[in-house]
Length: 305
Image (cartoon, rainbow, N blue to C red; front, top):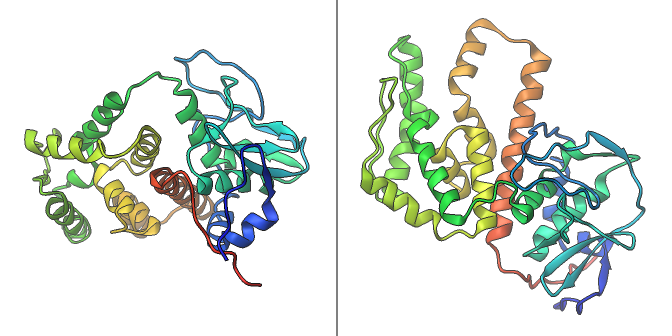
């Protein structure tokens, strides 16, 4: 049985939506308890205007003030309802997202909060606020240029000259990713032991610029977020293109650090916390890119219980 989207202004309970999207729910619930500490983007439950050119400073926690969470389809997209209140962005804009799947994921974040709303766990809400308010007022071309510039400092393009065991580890683990990217996108990248990094050909920049141009503004915000976590455009491309899993991409981005930990040891709780947080943030950004790249409406079957 196929379900139709509700008319504008109509709402649905999360219980019914979760039966329709069990995989999205189960995959995402495991990430909600991971802490988000990036102060450059944030969320508010209602109007709290901020200067457009300044970074958001999110409240840490707040007592939960709503009972039910639902979504509705309006003229501009899908909206989030906290009881009978419409969710707003930090700049007091109506919180409206382009796809139903993204709306469900955001609603899940809000519904998963317990007695206290922990804003630092709400990765997708944060990214949506950034996309809606665009606090730095950047255009699509500016986002693309900033993303392409990451190639100059890409983690996996910088190599050490010693010790030999780490040199070999970098070659074995990072070279396949570079080779895949060169073949997949038809561009030359390479690596270098120089502090200046590899020389990236102009044609490579043009190819990457053309590829990124196929994404919308929302997805580009997500791509930039993931690149910032991994310190690598190439790992981000592999992740978004499903060449790498989140776990693989994170470990590859931390290859030298993990090598040192294996050699010298670590503070167990601190390492584990940092690793899980990085995975959560990377997973959130990747999911955001995919959900923002889907069509605005989703046809789905009602699962038989």
